[in-house]
Length: 287
Image (cartoon, rainbow, N blue to C red; front, side, top):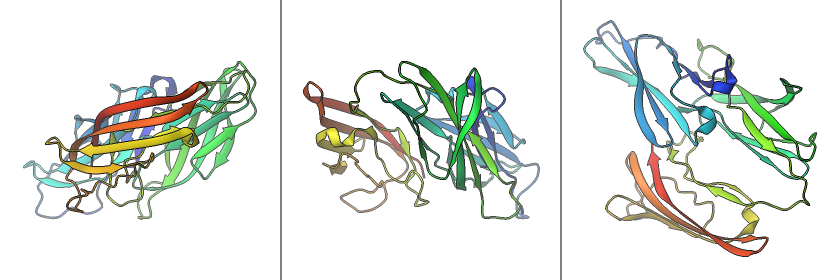
């Protein structure tokens, strides 16, 4: 995979452009012609969205702005439908934007097999998007904002493979995100959401099951239990960041790819006192 990008020609649509490179060498045991199949994992649901000989596909049946997680991988087969290999998984650039009384806070993730070198941040000004920053990290704070005004942002990342012969830089776009700047006195807001997919394959990207959280200092207590379809507990923790690496606490072995289930209870401090948050759902391991 080389691209999992919001369509730069129509950023508002949320359609995703996917690209991958052909292998440099092909073993003589495989019979031409060759074909590819592209799998999309959208918010934990896996489906094949393309089969053919091209190395680029526009996924028009998805809206990146509405997705919680979006991952792709490609497989290659020969004329006899023999599997020749598959790529590592690659996610879209997932941007989140939160506003306080005086600034817009942007953060993004990109779980990809290539190296991400830098990110450009764009902001809508007078109905046109302009670049306002270039950073090497995965977050940016825009203090050039006004109260009671809504702003729109997107980011563009640049990366590369260390292997020779693959196009560089690898340029990928996030969806456009909207944030409104408040007018009240500054108060720390609390939000806590859990992803649907993670990829514990040791590549340093998206290797653990962990929340997307703001206001972590407001958490009073936390309890999370992860179990399989037979009810066997694989992981339990009081750590609000969870940090499950996909291993069973009983066997210390990697859990196989598939869907698992969690129950998460959080107690946090709000402006009116302690409140409780109960989350229950599924998490898919992709290796």
